Amino acid sequence: LGTRLNDEAKDIFRRMERAAERMGLLVDDLLEYAHFGSAQGQQEKINLNEKLSRILSDLELMIAEKDATIDIEPLPVVKGQRRQIQQLFQNLLTNALKYSRPDVAPHVTITANVVNAADLDIPQDTYKSQCFHQIKVTDNGIGFQPEDAEKIFQVFTRLHGKDEYAGTGIGLSIAKKVVENHNGYIYATGQPGKGAEFTVLLPADESDAKALDNNWR
Image (cartoon, rainbow, N blue to C red; front, side):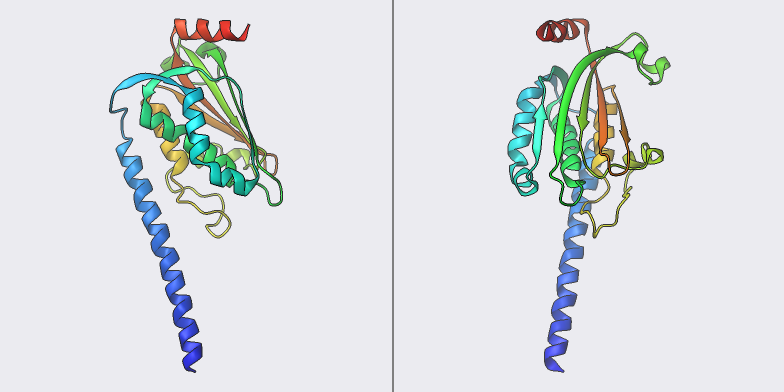
């Protein structure tokens, strides 16, 4: 009886420890979400190639554990708040790695080009006559139902149980908040079992657009 109670007590403590850890992560993410309520801090030019290199270094262990492949095309220089831009792409890349299919190594591609708002299916009254850096993060993971494309950006939204995939359901909400803080737009497309694609639109001025186009010629 004593041994059984001891085993039961250990199991209870383990569950309490896991619950406390999840609560700690939730509090941290909520504080992060509140902190990103606006684009506070100095706005500066940010080289996304350098930023993604640092993010890959931070996620090195996760990438190795998943045996993931990350392909990144040349990325632009954007104007924004450095910490927020880092959090945006770290959250998107972490999301792509986390929601991989069982026994399928993640393959994530990040591409960029310059587009006119008039050519995009976004609210034209808000973004009329602007051009954007269009950055796509595409994965081969579990995907999602098309009808959940907007829902996944809502705070606390989880399409899968916490026992399947760890997390707090705030990461994509933070990503959306950061993009909106920078007068941009973000949306997602996906299919169950066929992966997902997240498109980030960040404002590009005329000189940025010309410079990037010239680099690709």
